[in-house]
Each structure stands twice: as C-alpha cells, then as structure tokens.
Length: 460
Ligand code: GLA
Image (cartoon, rainbow, N blue to C red; front, side, top):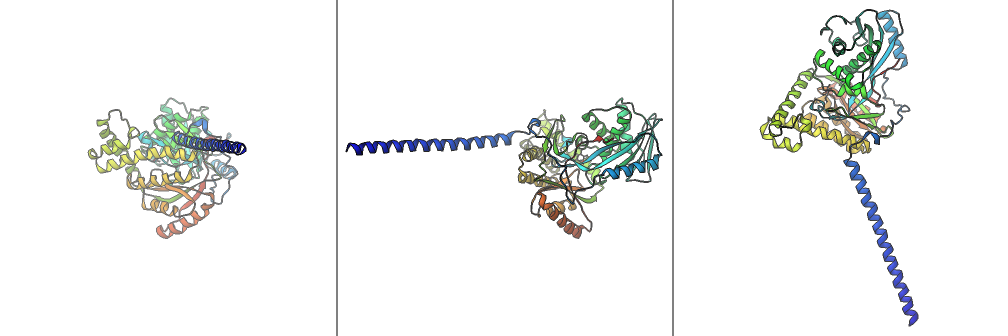
C-alpha cells in the first residue's frame, strides 16, 4: 500500500515536471514567434538608412549575352583618333564619362518635391577633350557627325542651332554666371546612349560637358551644386522645365546600387541590388512622340493647380509631397477631374517609391514588382503619360515567367520600359518581346540588361 502511494506520488511528480516542461517549451515558441513578428514589423516600418547598407556587391563578374557594350577601351581609343582628325594633334587628351539613368519608380514626383528611385546604367556619354589657348569652346558629337558647336566664353552665350548644342552652351553659360571661370576647350561627345530613349542622354551630356570644362579649368565642384547647374542649363537653354532627378543620379550614383532621392532636401539613400537574384532589363520602344515636351509642361501646371486648391484648406502645403491621399479625396469636389487624377498619381507614387526602396532592401522582389505594375497603371490611367507601345511592352513583359515587375520609365510618351527579372528569364523575355512587339508595331524593340553603375567621373 505504502509502495503504491510512493509510486503514485512519483508518477504525480513526473507528470507535474512534464507539464512544467511543456509550458516552458510553449512559452519559448511563443516568445520566438513574437520576436520574429516584432523584427519583421519594425523592419518594414524602417526607411532604409545608409549605415545599414552593405558595400556594393561585386558586379564585375556578371556577363550576359544581352549586356550592352557601353563603350569599351577600344571604342574610347577610336574616339581619340576621331578627335585628332577633327581637332588636330596637340596636348594630352582628357576623357570624362557620365552614365545614362533608368528610374525604377517614382515618376513625375521630382518636380513635386517628392521621392524618386533611379540608378545609373551602363550606356553612357564619354567626352574626349583638350584645353585651348583662346577662350573658344568648340564641340563635335559622334551622333551628329557633320555639325560643330562653337562659341566664345568672352561674349554672352545665346541659344542657337543645332539644338543639341544648347546643352553645351547652357552648361558653359550657367557655370560662368555662377562665377566659375572657364577656359577654352575642344571636345568630342561620344554617346552610347540612345537619344530619345528616355534614358537621360541630355543629363549625361550636360554633366560630362560641365565636368570637362571644370577639369580643364583646374576646378571641381560638389555633386549637388553641379546637378543644379546642369538642371538650370537644361531649363534655360534647352527650354525643358525638367525636375532634378536625372542630373542628381548622373552625378551621385553608386556602383551596384539604386538611389532613393528626396527631391526636397536632396537626401540620398542607397539600396544595393543583389546581382545573383535580379536583372534590370531595359526595353527601348524606339518611339518618341513629339508631344512629350508640351505635355510635360502641362502636367507640371496641373500639379501646381492641385497644390493651389489644397492650400486653401491646408495653408502649410508647399507641394504635392506634403499632401495625403485623404486630403486629395476630401478636395475631389473642388478640383477638375483631371487635376484630381494628377494629384492622386503623385501622392500614391511618392509612397510607392519609398516602399519599393524598402522592398528591394529586404529582397522582397515580388512585392517590389507589384509596385512597379501599379506605378505603370497609374501613369497610364491617372497621369496619362504612357502610350500604346509602352503599355504593350509592359503587358507582354508581365506574361513571361520569372518577371517580378515592369513599368514605363522616364517622362513618357515613348522611350523605354524597365523590368526586374529573375536572371534565367531574361533570354525568354527578349525573345518574346522581339516576336510580339515586331508583329504588332512593325519595329524592333531594343532589349538589354544593365548593372547599376557609378556616377560621372574623370577617366583620364
Ligand atoms: C524627365 C525629367 C525628370 C522627371 C521625369 C519624370 O525625365 O527630366 O526630371 O520629371 O521626366 O519622372
């Protein structure tokens, strides 16, 4: 009897111990689960901060059939020969490069003080140059082989033909009016960027010319100032009222990284792009509708109109950057339907740009891709800057297996789309687009893969 009771007490104690043990295990699991939830939520709430970022991943080993030849060494030496034919022999030649750009998301937000998320690409502009003894600037271009742009730094620099020369004239004039003394230069602009491809060949020309003039004058200025000077040159000499995105990314890009730029205070946060998992594919539609410039001006005006209306209720609003979707909805009855849709695009696109940077930082590519498609739809329906060719390319791209997302990129009305793809799907994408786009529009698209490159620099 005594033995049975002792055995029972022992069993009882064992059961209690088992119970306590299982409660402890359960608690540990719940605690781990809660910790994971907490970490995930706090990560998704946090804006990427620069010190979190790892150094640029090595992209130099990446080779692909669709990779562009972005002006290799031999092409540069050919261009030096071409320079000698045009300008004769003389002192040592200097070479300066400036990349094109593709905007991953955040379209038509820069002139609303908002966020953009571009990266610099491999196609680029290379300027071969040499200083002159006089105060003359004489420039040729490989894209327009029979034309020269020539002007004196001692006289007021006016706009003139050919049109491409106004980027050169504008940069020299604005640098001088900022009190920066320049000296004469002979230069050849060599361009592997498609002109009119929506990949910012203008900003690449402005920045490379500005850097060349500064280098030959023995000067250098910091990136933000250089970007603002180039933007002013484009606005006043090419008469395009552009935002600041293109010049900023062309000057401040970092290799292997995209750049989240706050266009109000120019804060930059860099997000590494993981080359093992991700390809950035650009598809040039090879069309450029000439209404682009006037429509761009009109979009800017419509945004300003929206701000003026919203300001009446909320006087602290300075730009659409300061506006919430709730405020846009509340003001719907007080603005035209078009202005309402323009505001809705900009406010939503701003949020998407910040969110996409977070998604790429966390390597959540599917979600990043969804944001790109939403951005495209909004640019097509609300902002109305797309065109049938771009819509078709995005639609067809999304049909290919392994594509995370796609959207039109740049100002719109032609130019290019950008897609994020799994490495293995790039070939299939290129084939599919060549087949379907050519059948529908009777022209070949230009499909290429690019890594994220560094901003403008002096090569030699
Ligand atoms: C053009 C302009 C940029 C920007 C985009 C649209 O590329 O030059 O400043 O406004 O359009 O996002």
